[in-house]
Length: 478
Image (tube, rainbow, N blue to C red; front, side, top):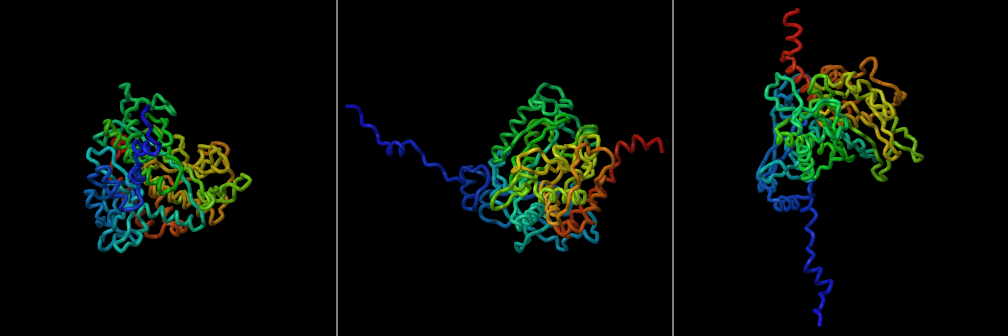
């Protein structure tokens, strides 16, 4: 007699293993401390980096053993951390820029939905982005993540939810140990330095195949999703596009992507830089932001009427950006170097015009279906803190809707001819931010005072440096 067949029930019991709980398989984020403990244990994590962005978007925080992290230990940073310049200096106090009298602590509160591994570390390490609160748990309004959350709250109060999709440009450059020397493109796999004019070139991307593989690998390990990657016009200039989604989550992703790309580049003996204008005579690097707003309950795009035509909110959003973005530009272009990118001869908008599928305008409306109707802000540079850039851009659109600001007529020709309609330098941009009462109502007097004070401090530091231009043209001629 043939052997009896096992029943399907017994077979399934013997061959099918129960799937592990979802939190253990998640690449990114858990919902409770209990899940976090299990997630860390399952991966053998030894250390946890608790990080948060400072005003420049630089990761600050503390590293600790996993056992200490899961014991709900108190994490603190000094409040002065949000008052120093990119060079680590502390500006003098002014009427509106003040230090906390006691330099008291701020508390880090881990956002467990951001928990992920740090794939480039040799020892098993995890990272988590933290919110910042006062010692009594009160919100600190001037920290970048909170600035963006406050703008999101304005939309939420109206029953809306913004949707964004950032595009981040950056350069790969050869190792540069002496800042007195200009930057140069690195050598690719061909052994030759890549030249400019390689927009959308697959061969240009292939020059750095192994590096790009590591970027994808590191991103996948962290649960970060890249939509597309292209080669831009500059030599070894790349662009990464992220999928559209929640502004806070996308700001978190840009924050982590910058770190990821830098680490991947260092692994291959080169630098990745997000400077707005790293090389003279070459295109600058932008962080274009695609923006739309949906009804929080229905998910319908409020920029489109039921019949598919553009809505009043759509035009008012553009009107608000035209009116207020010039005054908030210092949050989109935060350094002296940022304004080197904003020049009319380098395919970068230097206006506050808008148009349909017109890349010479500051605010471009891509061709799309009604449900995907959106406005692309082309002014932010890639050196911007993503939380502050998104907050500024969305705040300007929100003000436009609330104040029913009408936009100009759309521009159908080249918009970059003639005068520059934006602040031409850092100090001018800072002054415009301080003078705009509508932005103070959105961001708060404390944030604007701190941010403006730090930016003025950075400008004074810059003024201490004598440039090659001065030595070349002033040394023997004046």
